[in-house]
Image (cartoon, rainbow, N blue to C red; front, side, top):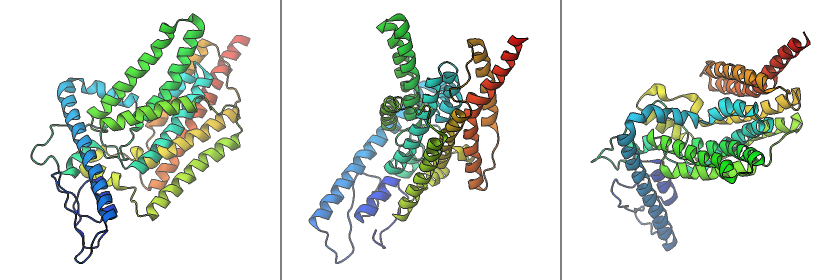
Amino acid sequence: MAPDAEILPRSRSRHLLRQETGAPALRKTTRCRMATKPGRVESASRRVGSFIVTRRILDMEAVYTQGIWMAEGLQQRTMSQEKTWQVITHIGDPKAAFLLVFPFTYFISKRAGVAVLWVAAVSEWLNLVFKWMLFGERPFWWIGESRLFVNKQPKVHQFSSTCETGPGSPSGHAMVTAAVWWVVVSSLGSFLYSRTHSLVLSAAPYLLYVVMLVAVGISRIFILAHFPHQVIAGSITGLILGIVLSRRVPEGRPLLFFFCLSIGLLLSTLMLHAGLQQLGIDLSWSIALAKKWCSHAEWIRLDTAPFSSLTRDCGALLGLGLAQYWKPGGWSLPWAPRALSLAISSMGLYHVHRLPLPVRPQGLFYGLFFVKFVIVPQIVMVLVPGLVYLFTHKKKKD
């Protein structure tokens, strides 16, 4: 970047344009004035490259703008269903895959439950990497950063779940939901077909799958957390990951495999972060924008930061390995003790999730967050069903 180039508080995409072309930031109109230092003549290839980059950014601005107006129309038409959208967005939260979908699925089918935990951890980790590479904007901060709405401000509102701090593309809610629920619906569809041999009945779970993805996507647009194209990208990517990862569930693997996988993902991500920082890419840019444009400071939570999802995923994978190490194959329980185990596990996970963690220093927070999700598989797969088995087994002997 030229040292005398002016820096205006524009969106991340405009900053990247200036870094790549040496040009000043775009104005609020669609014109772009290319300037160079006195006495310097740009080559033809540089001018062509600058034009292509500028054109792409202008195209993205049009996509972002249409997304803002879509969110405005959605809020105006369905504001009375605000609580419904809030509930749906919480159901699509990646944390729900670990704390709700995993225990519920595990006590119906052990293999499906293990697959859910496996797919949730790997897909969320990949979502983090994609977000670091794609630099996706979020609607709630792009409205202010772009300065395209000075004359006509959109009539939109933020909510308590709006102000996430990571980049926006692709949508993590849509991606993890698509991946995890593919495991659930495909298992349920196969079960129904094996029992009824009815294509119509076995196709019903897939229809509900599509409805769920649409509902989660709309909820994310409604609360200004994502643009429509980010939701679509997340859903498609999650579907592909669900299909691929569900065929490679690490059942019966030694504890060393999970330990190496967990530490490997953690260290490789930290190395990627350090490498991008060395290249001059500030990966905390989204956190700064979230703090700047969130309407309520208390809505900024550390558990929505990118490193929180990283420690959650690595902790869950190590916890999965430990649970399979302590009790290979899990506990064999009849349906009634399974239902009891599910109820007790849900209560236990609720209290584990609600356990307050110190946010300073951040290293301590992330360490305890890692431990918290190491514990999750132990509660569901080892501790609670083991206690229920011990209690019901003694009762039968008496």
